[in-house]
Structures are given as C-alpha cells and as structure tokens.
Length: 282
Image (cartoon, rainbow, N blue to C red; front, side):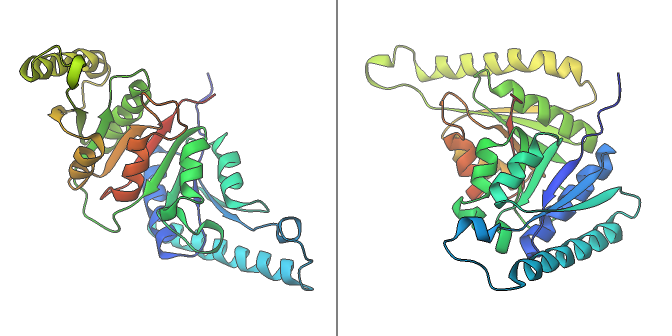
C-alpha cells in the first residue's frame, strides 16, 4: 500500500492570525513528514456582486494574493528549511475553497480570525463554516505564541463520535511525545430521570471511561494517558484544560445531529490553545 502523504493545508491572508496558523501548520507538517500547502482565496467579485469590477481590479487582487503567498512561503522556509511547501491561489469564496481543499488533505489549519479572504472567523463566517462542513480534521489555531506544554487534551462524550476524536488525539500525542489527557465532563440528570445517586453515577462514569480507553492504550503503549472524569459543563472543563495544553481535540458533534456541536463551537471561541475539530470523512 502506498504511503499516505496527503498535505496539511493552511489558509493564509497576510494577517497575524494567519501567520500563527502557518507556523503551527508548518511545525505539524514537519513532525508528521507531510507536505504543506498554503492556500489564499481570491473572492470572485464579478459573480457575487451586481456590478462589474473596475478595469484591472481582478488582476490587482490576484497580484496581491500572489504577493501574500510568496511572503508566506518565505516565512515557512525560514521556520522549516527542509519542509516541502507549495502555494496555491484559488478563485473561490474562502469557505468554499477550504472545504474543497479538505477533501484531499490530512487536515486544514486556519487562524482564529483574519483579514480579507479569511476575515470573521471569530464570529463564525468562514472558520465555523469550515469546521462545521469540511471533511476530516480542521484545526483552529488559538492562543498565540506560547511554550510547548507537553500535553494533548481530548474531550469525549462516550457517543460513537468520540472514536474519531480519540483516534486523532492519540496520534497527535504520539507524534509529539506528549501526554494525553482525556476529559469526560458530565451532568447528573434531574427530576424523574434522577434514578441513581450522584456518587454512583460518578463511579459508573469513571469505570466506563477506563473501559473505553483500554484498547486505545494498548494500541499506543508509548503514550502516557491521564483521564479526568468531572461533573461539569464540557465547554467549561475543556477550556480550563486548554490552558495547560498544546492542542484540544474534539469530535465535530456529539449526541447532537448538528454539523458542529455546541462543545466544538464553544471551544473554537474560548479555548486557550489550538482546537482540532474532527469529523469522519464521508
């Protein structure tokens, strides 16, 4: 079987946030031995707005995009001289461009907000669309420059979707030689559904998480694993865990049928480190 060398794709637009995403993506591509593809999206103005662009406007925008990509490639080679990196200028709305790129990528990396082609991520216009609809893994880089913490956090809810998060999280911890902390946050049922004591529910939760992790620990014996089973809201607990983490990994959705669950949505906005939102490829 041929080795999978699908690239890591990063959206760039010349903003500080995109620069942070590029640095993160370059480091991840280097540690994984994968090529890096830098993508800049040029909005197809003539098709999207009810007037014709001024003469040479499209050419000027494309030239600006090429300049952004040239500078981005130079930066990447300064950080990682031996990394195979390519640049691609695409004429697409940014969200559509990233979603299309995701189909053949190992993962797609974006900054938490941007300029021009990738603006509004914090508010959800592009980044949330990408995390919500792109196949595979989307990493939203938050937290700025910070020292390595030596820990990856995985948030699980014991639904079938947790398997995708654990798969990526164990692999991420292995390639970083980092500890993996698995967090399961739960809230006891109330009213007529409260048939068990809280203490008994807590014991069941701890036992269930241990059982879920056993096959993964056997598959990744080199990864040190800790697990926290806590009574609380998942977003609050995972944001707290993100302070000491290099990466937080969650499934795109849990028990909800929404394309992007409330937990992944909350983490994209509030985590203190990069967040990987993982969806099975369709």
